[in-house]
Every structure is written in structure tokens, then in C-alpha cells.
Amino acid sequence: MPHMKTAAGEAMPKVPPTDAELIGAFRNLEHEICCLNYMADILADLLDDQLVPMETRGNEALMIMLTKHQLETLSFAWNDVTFRAKRVHDAFYAAGEGETIR
Image 1 (cartoon, rainbow, N blue to C red):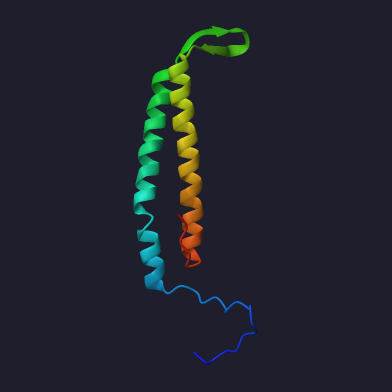
Image 2: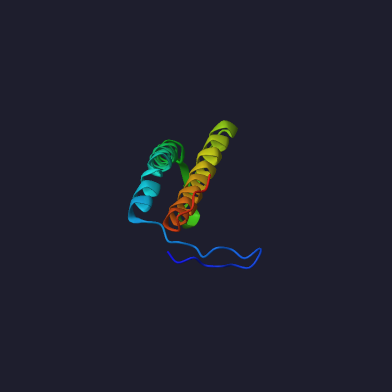
């Protein structure tokens, strides 16, 4: 690579990641992807088990009864899946740029 002079405080030009670096970065996402998949399965099971209509009202509206604990558990799982999905999304695109986020 030719020697390039930069002014003080000027950033060096960004070098795209090599194929090997990209492969390594994407492989490093395996744990996060697997955790997201497991949490999504847990959330799906919770929704299937707990969102059971107690009765149907006019216009096909459903009434569902949840305990405070059930609502808190569903809320936790839903927010956790959302958080994990955003983190995997951001890490995926950062890896494509040769960056790592934690």
C-alpha cells in the first residue's frame, strides 16, 4: 500500500475487511443468534400457553385473563427477544464493515 500522508486529526481511510475477517466476524455471531432463537422459542411457548381466550365478546373480541406474574413473564420475554434481535441486527451490519460491537 503506498504511503499516504494525512493531516493532523484526519482519519486514515477505512480498509474493507478481508473475506477471512468477514467469515470470522459472522462466525462470532453464532452464540448471539442461537440465544435469540432459544428466547424466541420460549416466547412462542409462553404465548401459546398463556394467551388462551376465556370468552368471546361481540365483534369477535376475545377476553384473556393473565396473572400479574404471567404478564410480567410475557413482558420480560417479549422485551428480551426485541433487545436480542436489535443487538444481532446491529452486530451483523457492523461485522460487514469490519467492526465489532458488544
